[in-house]
Length: 251
Ligand SMILES: O=C(CO)[C@H](O)[C@H](O)COP(=O)(O)O
Image 1: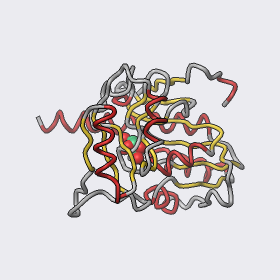
Image 2: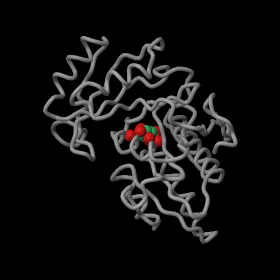
Image 3: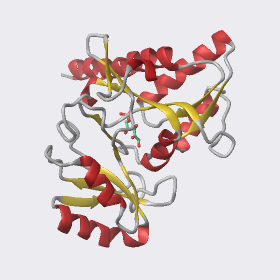
Image 4: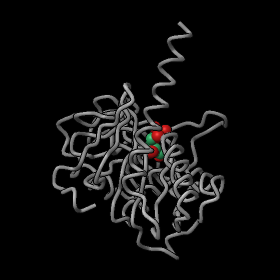
């Protein structure tokens, strides 16, 4: 039993790695400013970025999307920059919790959605790297942990009530694992997770309505933002998916 569990964990990690390598090789160019996403898959992407930069003496600058991303940039000795020095990015590479068949995303499983969305919105191209468990037809098909929403701490409860009353489902305050109390984001806010994943939702409209609620800082719904997604598959190959309204030569 333990043996089988180990095999499946290994293949998930190698799926993350092959997807990351393929995406970085396809999109990384010298003299570019890159947004670095957060999560476990992005670690492999940063490893590959560092390899290419070192081998080819490329010049790049990296904008982090979280404390974790900043640490990764430091660890791999990549040049760190920010949106003040570089308000426009060439590329942002990030992971996702779920990707639908038109490259709409759920993000924020790791709690970094606000800076991730800001940095992605400043990039010409957002590329997603993920393993095969993230590749869905519709949002909520496989990801069952709800839609992450970052909120201002003082109003988390009214927001939870309003979302439940207006849209249905249940919303929970995300609690920390190794600390008493809630998860505090890199921006000093709380995360609530909304458990209604109805495939019939108009996610774009819903996202706009959520963002209009006072106290909602950002949602983990990334609608029409990603250009391409790379999914590592269990057999070691990589599935590449492009947003339907995009053309290959726009990258
Ligand atoms: O949105 C995120 C963090 O806020 C991550 O990109 C997402 O959770 C995917 O993480 P992983 O690569 O570990 O599966």
